Length: 240
Image (tube, rainbow, N blue to C red; front, side, top):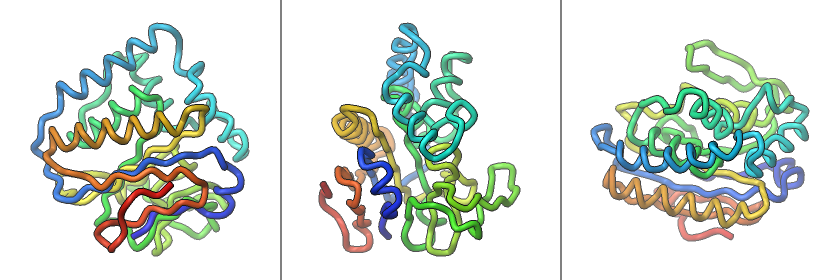
């Protein structure tokens, strides 16, 4: 499989940088509480200086959502939503060791981190504008149809695995106790985003290797038209 961005995404958001980690051989029994606590503490320390809305990472996403015609405070990117919840509740929910690590890394860096179960993604995964005939399965189980022009993560079977870009993922490819293979996608558009995404991707990959005992294939997509090619399909290496 490949992860790629449409021409619209390339031209409209040329400053976007993506970090990718592909995992195979995941199990549900790992313990990552200490690592999650350390990452979360970093985010809480930063929040003491001011709310997440003032972070340059979040401001860049808000500008992107405005460019897409969305109200940024109505549709928040995943990292902003998590930071907002952390600021109000003081903690994040415990779901699955992989998800817990990714959520904690997301708040520590204020960068969205999406995780897709690859066994439920058909063919390639393209970040593009919706045609209006794709299928999105919400966590409630309800089926939705993304609006034409809305930015989604779409597979070859016409399923939308995320709506409004980094706003809301689908139940269809959500990580569960049965997940064996996953694709982690981190994205940023702020100044210094390339360095931050590289740090986030490397730290997250190392933590996963230590706690889940799974070594991942890691890549950085440093140019708008860069494509990630799955190592399981003969791809690999660094794209930049």
